Amino acid sequence: MDALWVSDPANVRSLSGFTSPADGKVLVTRQGATLYTDARYTVQAEQESPLPAFIARPPATYDHAAPGLEGLRVGFEAESLTVAGLEDLQAAWPGVTLVPLRGVVQELRAVKSPGEIRQIREAQALADRVFGEVRPLIRAGVTEQDVAYEIESRLLRAGAESAFGIIVASGPRGALPHGHASGRVIEDGDLVTVDMGARLGGYHSDMTRTVAVGTPGEEMRRIYRAVYEAEQAAVAAVKPGVRAADLDAVARDILTAHGLGEAFAHSLGHGVGLEVHERPGLRGTSEDVLEAGMLVTIEPGAYVPGLGGVRIEDLLLVTEDGHEVLSRSPIEEL
Image 1 (spheres, rainbow, N blue to C red):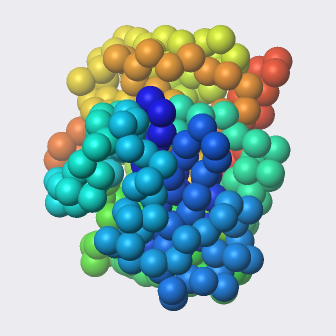
Image 2: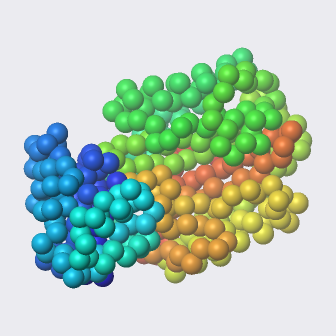
């Protein structure tokens, strides 16, 4: 490629520092990079981004870029540019060969800078603090939505926001891996899965804890112990040079040995940064290899329809000689 037209918001922010990236684009050429946004952000772009900014809306944006692109091969982000957006570029740049690309900037973002690691560490510390405040409120008689409200409101009061729709899944609803908080009343004997994170300074954290209200039945305690064993084994295996697919296999093999292989319905984990889910992908088909500076989740789970489910998730920093667990909220023993 001779140039790259960047339209994915997280990639725009990563390259430019601009904190309203949904309303921006970046053109990267061999001579440098330019941020494109509109007049609502004139002052903001000047304050936030080291890149030169051109303030206009299309088609003026395309006209500004066109003279230096004639005859070049320009990549565009196939996963974020709409069909209409591509048609607009083709019309504005008739002498340009536009080439669809995937994951170019995402691959660069997988290894975090010291500043990014600091931001994510702070986001996770805040999430841990809020979870610690809310844990005593998870009891029989309150609703899942009550718990989610307490988490979200405390994050907001601390200057952050929820990283994603908070998952609170109790009792049989624990079998829903993405069981966002409902009006169900938590009952004595339930396991309650809480998946939450903080978004602070544009960066995310991600953590899941499954907690007991009263004394759960023996089968759910068995499932919990199996998931905990798988999670701890996969965490222990995290270090530079490990294939993501092999980490997934560590946890999956343990759950399979417990008769829960089919109940583990998702991948082991994912990268975390400007997006909650980014590279590397910790799944059986992944070709990613861990490197120092990556932030990843380890989150095996087991979900049994009609009975319930368990997920335990930690956020880890891959270090030069192994890993550091950033999520400090206690994991309960059952």
